[in-house]
Image 1 (cartoon, helix red, strand yellow):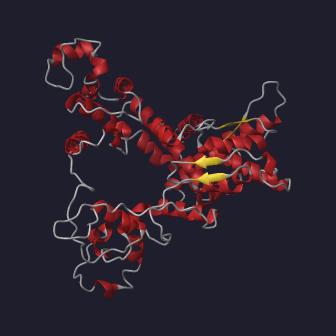
Image 2: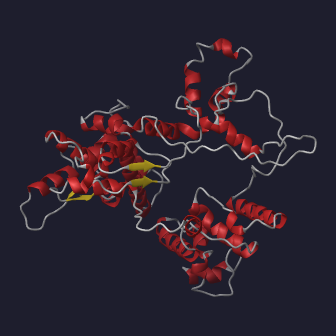
Image 3: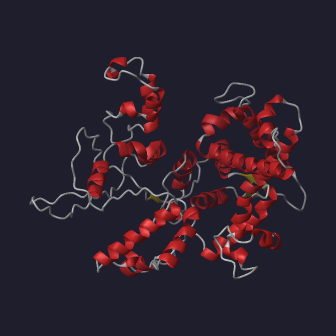
Length: 483
């Protein structure tokens, strides 16, 4: 932010909110007659815990898979079973929200009508999931009954109705249709300030509808999103779709594979037989969600968008025997994706450079050590390169943060600034607390004990002369004190 302000100037009076909050604020202005709160995931999880405990006490065979997971035949402590039940409720809470965001028409509409969407078996996974969902959000579900009583209550102490954000949008949509009023009917003079959406790699079908059918009538919306290809690529099949289509047509097109004497199941699953596909493999790897996101945004804007595509920088070094500069490996890769270049039958025979490097590392610590070594090499070879011009991007900060702190500080003495994640001391303290509380649900194995003992925050409470990270010190003398 400071660098941007230095180059572009200071931008004041900007409000940074999440997309869900922007949608909720728009709904609040048009649902002023209702007293409601957003249903929190923690509340849903607690309600699911209550329903699951009740269902598991019955002899209904529908709950046999769940009962077998919570209380297996193997020896399992009651605390561990309770932990499993809590985790299952949390996972189901996440799944139910994903169904609302992305699969409302495909799944929840059928569940609301009392039938399965996919698995027609009476004892399948979808059947007991539908039963749980109906216990909460069905016509006589816990949340539905609560909302009904809250609307009819004449008590002085009002109880707010509880809705998820997708439920609120559907509620207001149905009310506006009954009143024959346009959703968010406001004059242009009353429009709110423009909404600029950044950093969203994928918009669910719910978010798409909320933006196009609701917020778009309330304020101007600008979406800044990544599109890897400037060509039309909505018809590109992902690897999974390509394999499925090839498997379906394999028998009908057996002559296509005459050069293969044996077709093993492993080869088909791994996609080895489909290397002659012409589509760009990197666009295929972008996946179905990314492709559908671009497609929906294009439909929303009627394919009228402002492109900011740029050619890959081709400022590669001159080769000794050629007057024409050669593209770097990374430049060539970017250009192939940008222009949807098909898969090549023959290699380009580019000279290997450092624009794109793939390293095989045994664990996250070795990955961070390799990156730190590369950064120091670049700094030594290029005196003009500054450390603040180097960026390290990881896909899981919880997994890599501790390794980055240890390697950059202790081993390589490499200055860094952590943008994402929490402070190192807070992270280690959280790990220590989780390990300590987690012991209640373990068998106190050596691995469980040392995951706590090796934490610096834990060791500070005891003998300072004992070094962390070693499992060979006098266990009989220390274990009792630590416990």
